[in-house]
Length: 256
Length: 303
Image 1 (tube, each protein chain N blue to C red):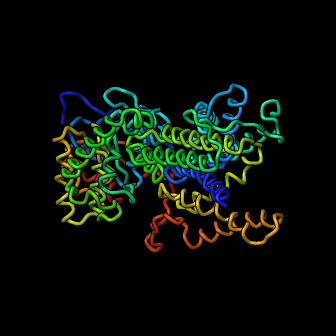
Image 2: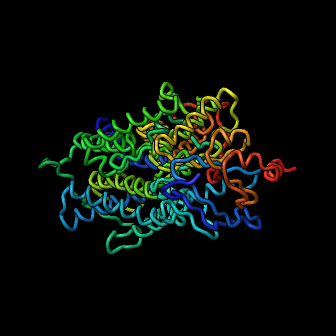
Image 3: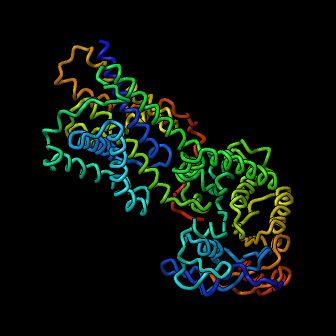
């Protein structure tokens, strides 16, 4: 699916080894803006490692990761996020003892209220910003269908709702690119019906999505393009239907 | 008896400032510091020295103390917090030992063990504070100011970020929060506030020497925080009221001084151990049902 404006994320020749294990091996692919790209592959293909390499949690041994042409390799995670590339975690990492609203507020960048100096020197600006952030956080929760649970503790939500919350808080960061690590794993049919449309609608809000998905059947519902990863290397890429119907890939995927 | 009560209240004010400021680190961002007594000392020496040699007044002394405390902490916080929060307890222990050695051995300035006598009483808006009750008012006013500052810091977007860092650094970084910078900032603020207590103490007792700022004082301040409850802003205040009453209560028992001093240490130790078993969240802390505690998550695993 070609895009007029060129790729927003470019992963070029990225490699990462842990001890003797080559987790990611000369991996090259790009992500088109305002589309959903699915990253699939068997267990241990290096999908989460790629996320960690893009977002600065791991540093590649070789290769480059660019966002709109700017090199991300070498930046700490919070700088990568501030450039506009945010990620969720497979194990969510919510602030369980905080409310749903606070979790989303932490996604908002509040330069005046988060600065210990302006906190005292510009009380009116701090108050105004907190009010804006709250209104925005509630809007975000509305979009993810969690507004009525804004004041519950994150740990009290059901699992699918916790997953939505993990997406809501990075949506609130205003990052252009959202990396979703298995947004629908462990869901029953009802939860899937609820979550898949929300993921699809992220694109309408100008977001570019790169997601990891385990389920070969779901990938065509979730994504516009698929990158198939095997042993840390891109084996194929293309439309979901092409990838899921390729017998060679299915064989690798199911490990026959 | 009233002078006695006044002295107790002044000390409650001083230790409340110390415990409140230490709790910014311990309770709100989860960093343990063993240097708080040394920082208290830095504040005391800094304001005593500028009062004795430069004739600087009480307010000027407070500012100098805060700046000196902030600088001393930043010196250690900047290199050590860049590595990982866990190292800070070791680095702060080092800072405590080094600063105490400086207080004891830089005799040209600190007068060593003999200490600095003759520190002037504070003059507040033209009023010399020299009666016990005036001092109670001043100490409690400064404690209230510290409380207000801590409240502002913790009940804000900044405080939210600190607690997010405490609970999950990796998630905080993923939300674009600069974990290292925020830790350095709060360690510096905590020490600036802690140093205010030193200034207050120096002008109250009018004499300081290194023995007031030794390691056991750091541990004592930590006990105030833990006993009072570190997850509430007011927890350390309760800790200060109760633990400072312990030696006073002992004085009413007919125990000779030689026994009473070690008795105190034993009692503090015993109280801490009892609390760890019976009420680990402290007196004001929010109780958590044990059965519902999630399994511990290793903080450095990513994914």
